[in-house]
Image (cartoon, rainbow, N blue to C red):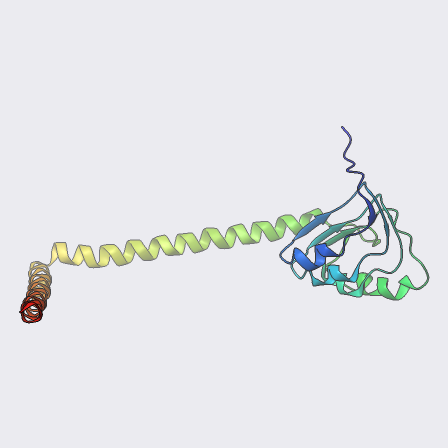
Length: 182
């Protein structure tokens, strides 16, 4: 199966101008040429950029130093690019080509495990809070007859007050309509 799209020409500048929420941009195995457009700097959510197996050359924009992963494959680096690469080499969060440091697999899995453990303990805490709160109130009403009668009496009084207010407002509206119709 051939993965090539065979798009050609320069990397479209409109990508950086129109797709502002883009997180992953994979444009590998095409026939793009020229330099990376500065408009890609507008993609503030971009995490992964893959321009490998193209004919891209020139400077890497310094704004791309916050990417999680970047792969250029056969990217041609010029002497002028050395300053731009310093930003990538000094960013400890970046790894993989064109950088010399490979990405550690354990770091990603330990971060995922930490996130899963946090979610698990958060859910346990929420369940315990609900269980204790619900049975603290419901159990005390079931076991203590005085509290149960007082709470139901309170609810009946609230219901009566709401119904009385509703009846008064209904009567006032009916009187207003009768006056306006006469």
